[in-house]
Image (cartoon, rainbow, N blue to C red):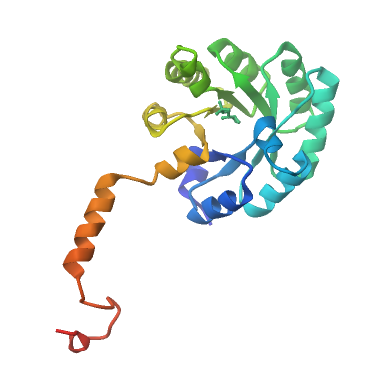
Length: 234
Ligand code: E4P
Protein backbone atom coordinates (compact mmCIF):
# COMPACT_ATOMS: atom_id res chain seq x y z
CA UNK A 1 0.00 0.00 0.00
CA UNK A 2 1.33 3.44 -0.86
CA UNK A 3 1.16 5.60 2.23
CA UNK A 4 1.41 9.36 2.51
CA UNK A 5 4.73 9.09 4.33
CA UNK A 6 6.25 7.18 1.40
CA UNK A 7 6.03 10.29 -0.75
CA UNK A 8 5.89 13.13 1.76
CA UNK A 9 9.24 12.32 3.38
CA UNK A 10 8.23 12.66 7.00
CA UNK A 11 9.01 9.79 9.33
CA UNK A 12 7.77 9.13 12.83
CA UNK A 13 9.63 6.59 14.93
CA UNK A 14 9.26 5.39 18.51
CA UNK A 15 12.23 5.13 20.85
CA UNK A 16 11.69 1.91 22.78
CA UNK A 17 12.48 -1.81 22.95
CA UNK A 18 9.18 -2.71 24.67
CA UNK A 19 7.77 -5.33 22.30
CA UNK A 20 4.18 -5.12 23.59
CA UNK A 21 4.16 -1.35 23.07
CA UNK A 22 5.73 -1.71 19.64
CA UNK A 23 3.00 -4.19 18.58
CA UNK A 24 0.31 -1.81 19.78
CA UNK A 25 1.91 1.21 18.15
CA UNK A 26 2.42 -0.69 14.87
CA UNK A 27 -1.33 -1.45 14.77
CA UNK A 28 -2.04 2.30 14.97
CA UNK A 29 -0.53 2.56 11.50
CA UNK A 30 1.25 5.83 12.21
CA UNK A 31 4.79 4.70 13.03
CA UNK A 32 7.47 4.25 10.38
CA UNK A 33 10.09 2.43 12.46
CA UNK A 34 11.72 1.98 15.86
CA UNK A 35 14.90 3.50 17.31
CA UNK A 36 16.93 1.88 20.07
CA UNK A 37 20.07 2.71 21.99
CA UNK A 38 22.28 0.77 24.44
CA UNK A 39 20.42 2.13 27.49
CA UNK A 40 17.02 1.09 26.13
CA UNK A 41 18.23 -2.41 25.19
CA UNK A 42 20.00 -2.87 28.54
CA UNK A 43 16.60 -2.48 30.24
CA UNK A 44 15.47 -5.74 28.60
CA UNK A 45 16.59 -9.29 29.41
CA UNK A 46 17.58 -9.95 25.80
CA UNK A 47 20.72 -9.55 23.66
CA UNK A 48 20.90 -6.64 21.22
CA UNK A 49 20.53 -9.15 18.37
CA UNK A 50 17.39 -10.68 19.91
CA UNK A 51 15.87 -7.24 20.49
CA UNK A 52 16.48 -6.08 16.91
CA UNK A 53 15.17 -9.34 15.41
CA UNK A 54 12.05 -9.26 17.59
CA UNK A 55 11.29 -5.64 16.75
CA UNK A 56 11.85 -6.31 13.03
CA UNK A 57 9.21 -9.07 13.12
CA UNK A 58 6.65 -6.64 14.51
CA UNK A 59 7.04 -3.58 12.31
CA UNK A 60 7.04 -2.60 8.68
CA UNK A 61 10.01 -0.21 8.65
CA UNK A 62 13.56 0.21 9.89
CA UNK A 63 15.01 -0.71 13.29
CA UNK A 64 17.84 1.59 14.37
CA UNK A 65 20.62 -0.17 16.32
CA UNK A 66 23.57 1.63 17.93
CA UNK A 67 27.15 0.33 17.96
CA UNK A 68 28.74 -0.15 21.39
CA UNK A 69 32.42 -0.09 20.31
CA UNK A 70 34.30 3.21 20.33
CA UNK A 71 37.14 2.34 17.93
CA UNK A 72 36.84 2.34 14.15
CA UNK A 73 37.31 -1.38 13.50
CA UNK A 74 34.95 -2.33 16.34
CA UNK A 75 32.24 0.00 15.06
CA UNK A 76 32.64 -1.27 11.51
CA UNK A 77 32.49 -4.89 12.65
CA UNK A 78 29.37 -4.26 14.74
CA UNK A 79 27.78 -2.21 11.97
CA UNK A 80 28.24 -5.02 9.46
CA UNK A 81 26.82 -7.56 11.90
CA UNK A 82 23.80 -5.38 12.79
CA UNK A 83 23.08 -4.87 9.10
CA UNK A 84 22.73 -8.65 8.68
CA UNK A 85 20.41 -9.11 11.68
CA UNK A 86 17.25 -8.16 9.80
CA UNK A 87 16.36 -6.88 6.34
CA UNK A 88 15.75 -3.30 7.46
CA UNK A 89 18.36 -2.20 10.01
CA UNK A 90 19.94 1.26 10.17
CA UNK A 91 23.20 1.48 12.14
CA UNK A 92 23.68 4.28 14.67
CA UNK A 93 27.23 5.56 15.13
CA UNK A 94 28.30 8.15 17.72
CA UNK A 95 29.51 11.61 16.65
CA UNK A 96 33.20 11.02 17.37
CA UNK A 97 36.23 11.28 15.09
CA UNK A 98 36.41 7.47 14.98
CA UNK A 99 32.66 7.37 14.36
CA UNK A 100 32.96 9.49 11.21
CA UNK A 101 35.64 7.16 9.85
CA UNK A 102 33.52 4.10 10.62
CA UNK A 103 30.56 5.83 8.98
CA UNK A 104 32.59 6.47 5.82
CA UNK A 105 33.59 2.81 5.63
CA UNK A 106 30.12 1.43 6.27
CA UNK A 107 28.49 3.81 3.77
CA UNK A 108 31.18 2.80 1.26
CA UNK A 109 29.98 -0.79 1.65
CA UNK A 110 26.39 0.29 1.04
CA UNK A 111 25.31 -0.21 4.68
CA UNK A 112 22.77 2.32 5.92
CA UNK A 113 24.24 4.18 8.87
CA UNK A 114 23.96 7.58 10.49
CA UNK A 115 25.22 9.66 13.38
CA UNK A 116 23.72 9.81 16.85
CA UNK A 117 24.54 11.48 20.19
CA UNK A 118 24.86 14.62 18.06
CA UNK A 119 24.59 18.14 19.44
CA UNK A 120 25.68 20.70 16.83
CA UNK A 121 25.21 21.90 13.26
CA UNK A 122 28.90 21.26 12.60
CA UNK A 123 28.66 17.62 13.66
CA UNK A 124 25.56 17.24 11.48
CA UNK A 125 27.17 18.78 8.36
CA UNK A 126 30.24 16.54 8.71
CA UNK A 127 27.95 13.52 8.92
CA UNK A 128 26.07 14.58 5.79
CA UNK A 129 29.40 15.05 3.99
CA UNK A 130 30.04 11.34 4.74
CA UNK A 131 26.64 10.48 3.25
CA UNK A 132 25.05 9.63 6.60
CA UNK A 133 21.61 8.05 6.27
CA UNK A 134 20.43 10.24 9.16
CA UNK A 135 21.64 12.56 11.89
CA UNK A 136 19.99 12.52 15.31
CA UNK A 137 20.28 15.82 17.22
CA UNK A 138 19.38 15.30 20.88
CA UNK A 139 16.79 18.04 21.41
CA UNK A 140 15.92 17.18 25.01
CA UNK A 141 19.44 16.72 26.33
CA UNK A 142 20.49 20.07 24.80
CA UNK A 143 17.46 21.76 26.33
CA UNK A 144 18.05 20.07 29.71
CA UNK A 145 21.58 21.56 29.59
CA UNK A 146 20.19 25.07 29.11
CA UNK A 147 20.81 25.25 25.34
CA UNK A 148 18.24 25.68 22.59
CA UNK A 149 17.89 22.14 21.28
CA UNK A 150 14.97 23.10 19.06
CA UNK A 151 16.94 25.88 17.37
CA UNK A 152 19.97 23.64 16.80
CA UNK A 153 17.66 21.14 15.08
CA UNK A 154 15.97 23.86 12.99
CA UNK A 155 19.43 25.11 11.96
CA UNK A 156 20.51 21.61 10.93
CA UNK A 157 17.36 21.21 8.85
CA UNK A 158 17.90 24.63 7.22
CA UNK A 159 21.54 23.83 6.37
CA UNK A 160 20.61 20.43 4.90
CA UNK A 161 17.80 21.98 2.84
CA UNK A 162 20.16 24.73 1.63
CA UNK A 163 22.83 22.25 0.54
CA UNK A 164 20.36 19.66 -0.75
CA UNK A 165 21.77 16.88 1.45
CA UNK A 166 19.76 13.63 1.37
CA UNK A 167 20.64 12.85 5.01
CA UNK A 168 17.49 12.66 7.15
CA UNK A 169 17.28 15.01 10.13
CA UNK A 170 15.91 12.76 12.88
CA UNK A 171 15.08 14.79 15.99
CA UNK A 172 15.78 12.61 19.04
CA UNK A 173 15.54 12.89 22.80
CA UNK A 174 12.17 14.64 22.51
CA UNK A 175 10.80 15.31 25.98
CA UNK A 176 7.20 16.45 25.42
CA UNK A 177 4.49 17.22 22.87
CA UNK A 178 5.37 20.93 22.91
CA UNK A 179 8.84 20.13 21.57
CA UNK A 180 7.30 17.74 19.03
CA UNK A 181 4.92 20.50 17.89
CA UNK A 182 7.80 22.92 17.31
CA UNK A 183 9.70 20.27 15.36
CA UNK A 184 6.62 19.58 13.19
CA UNK A 185 6.19 23.33 12.61
CA UNK A 186 9.83 23.51 11.44
CA UNK A 187 9.20 20.65 8.98
CA UNK A 188 11.93 18.45 10.45
CA UNK A 189 12.33 15.27 8.35
CA UNK A 190 11.76 12.80 11.18
CA UNK A 191 11.17 12.51 14.91
CA UNK A 192 11.64 9.65 17.31
CA UNK A 193 9.35 9.84 20.34
CA UNK A 194 9.57 8.00 23.65
CA UNK A 195 6.37 6.08 24.53
CA UNK A 196 5.15 8.81 26.91
CA UNK A 197 5.30 11.51 24.22
CA UNK A 198 3.97 9.23 21.49
CA UNK A 199 0.91 8.26 23.58
CA UNK A 200 0.30 11.85 24.70
CA UNK A 201 0.28 12.88 21.03
CA UNK A 202 -3.15 11.26 20.60
CA UNK A 203 -4.72 13.12 23.53
CA UNK A 204 -6.59 16.38 23.83
CA UNK A 205 -8.95 17.22 26.68
CA UNK A 206 -11.43 18.78 24.23
CA UNK A 207 -11.64 15.43 22.40
CA UNK A 208 -12.62 13.71 25.67
CA UNK A 209 -15.09 16.47 26.47
CA UNK A 210 -16.57 16.41 22.95
CA UNK A 211 -17.01 12.63 23.02
CA UNK A 212 -18.73 12.73 26.42
CA UNK A 213 -21.23 15.20 24.95
CA UNK A 214 -21.92 13.02 21.89
CA UNK A 215 -22.41 9.95 24.11
CA UNK A 216 -24.86 11.84 26.34
CA UNK A 217 -26.84 13.15 23.36
CA UNK A 218 -26.99 9.71 21.74
CA UNK A 219 -28.31 8.28 25.02
CA UNK A 220 -30.32 5.08 24.47
CA UNK A 221 -30.75 5.41 20.70
CA UNK A 222 -29.04 2.02 20.37
CA UNK A 223 -27.09 0.43 17.54
CA UNK A 224 -26.25 2.91 14.75
CA UNK A 225 -26.22 -0.05 12.31
CA UNK A 226 -29.85 -1.08 12.93
CA UNK A 227 -31.89 -1.42 9.73
CA UNK A 228 -34.75 1.03 10.40
CA UNK A 229 -36.12 3.42 12.94
CA UNK A 230 -38.91 1.02 14.01
CA UNK A 231 -36.23 -0.86 15.93
CA UNK A 232 -35.90 2.27 18.04
CA UNK A 233 -36.79 1.84 21.67
CA UNK A 234 -38.70 5.12 21.58
C1 E4P B 1 17.81 8.48 19.85
O1 E4P B 1 17.68 7.65 18.97
C2 E4P B 1 18.01 8.16 21.26
O2 E4P B 1 17.74 6.79 21.46
C3 E4P B 1 17.12 8.88 22.21
O3 E4P B 1 16.18 9.72 21.58
C4 E4P B 1 17.82 9.49 23.39
O4 E4P B 1 16.87 10.08 24.23
P1 E4P B 1 17.10 10.38 25.77
O5 E4P B 1 17.81 11.69 25.88
O6 E4P B 1 15.71 10.46 26.34
O7 E4P B 1 17.87 9.23 26.32
